[in-house]
Image (tube, rainbow over all chains, first blue to last red; front, side):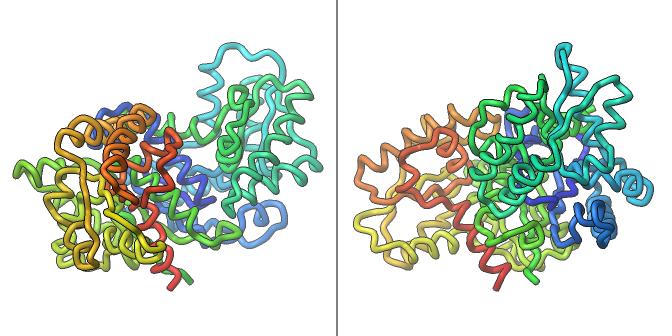
Length: 232
Length: 232
């Protein structure tokens, strides 16, 4: 019997739906009953994660903690959070949530270690908040992996609008914007790109981006880690 | 403040993910916080709905009821069930669940009444169990709408394999099979088709079926009804 997966979602909702679909795609199953038991808490009524981190705004931590408690009440065995920025509060959520939580960057690191050797730097596409929180930098530095990131101008012009367009359902426009941020990092020599914000794969898939092969999708990495954990 | 949507899912999981995505697509939203609060219970460990109805097999009712209770505990204001066949137990679930439940066929009827006048019969693609339970026939007959359905041979050759292929993640093969069932009903004069099983739109979208325009997607209809209810 597989473990029950809890999903702390809503950050944003479309990214949560994308994670759910990838969780199903990554599960070896012949029929309904082979799929994982999953409970998803997708309640996006919380303060902005970005503003909390970059501008000292109101913290969304109480709402995230309430979500963890709901998932615990529904007997989830562990939790996945399909939002990179939310991992700023990872240690606090682990300490106060009372339920094991997978770390999305650990899942990405597992994908990297399965990949064949990577020559040259890895590009990271993410929000400013994810950069400030160093959740990727600290973990990848430990593995001797060098990261290059978009300039603040590229984030303002391509990544942030791309993320916002996904949140309001304009996926193709989002894809075009995100593709330009991808191109900037490829031009600067990145051999592989980490899509370190869960709106980004939604955007690139909407335009069937030719760069998908060069990308490590943190959402899919977290889905794979969840399936491994659930079936272990 | 919108109402909280409960989703009794897992029947099957991919259909639940499809419903979740459509719920997000149908919500007018500019940012995360505008999206609906949603809790999804997708626990597919239950007896086969089809066997229970067509062969008198073990009933999945206790597991469905447990799901409703979980959603009620998470303060859902109402529930949507993205599975047509599951509506065989609709009245019992309403009576014992203690929470309002939308009916997927009422949602389809709403779509039909918004459509321009439909000349000629409507085709219904569904499982045998959905036909036996008459959930579509009884409601549409009340509105004077005539239904034509696939032959048992067409169901065995195209619809049932299509549904099973979705459940094991082989979506394009599923699409090709379902498209053949669609073609049979169009050839027999159907002017509009109801996709009366929530695996069917997943299959047809995987092949970007040209028949999508002729189809009423019960999953999207239920998503629209859920958004209306939540924002009412």
